[in-house]
Length: 256
Image (cartoon, rainbow, N blue to C red):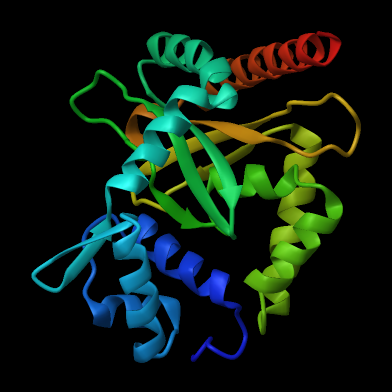
């Protein structure tokens, strides 16, 4: 699909940057054309501009994020209040359960991992920091969808389920159950043999505010068997503690 007629010049630049950020390795022009949907001449113009500003680097015809992109990443790590407020709780949850714990957010119809604390087991599940997967399947995606503001969730599902009304109906029913229970659980929906539980965290206590992110605990299905409720309970308590900390910090900043 050619997107040149449907996106602005600034959006074309962002399409290229988003493609490079989510690919996980250097991309050829053919790769970028397939992901962005831009015309080749348009793509070359965007890449040339991004190279000039240091956001993209090239090696033998393959393109990757450049040094300015690294500066952005370092700045995010230093200044992200969400990550900083969540890290201690995530670390304690990982130590208690001996499993991997991630902090995930929803961006552009994707689940993106902002922070990860890995299990010490040799056999472990790791949703790498920076990894993105579609906002559709798995505990992380369903937790984020279930606790979105209603309007945002409806718009997201409109995009995700074009031509699949039955799939949407089934997911909406599951999201209702997740909201009632307070957390999402999945097994092998994204990665085979991986069980996960995901619980929302909230910066604001106001009803309808929506979740800011979710804490996801993941483990090999074989090791989670028989421990599912205990792991879910620990993750719920951790998410609640992080939410309380975020809300207290927000109150203090607003009062200052």
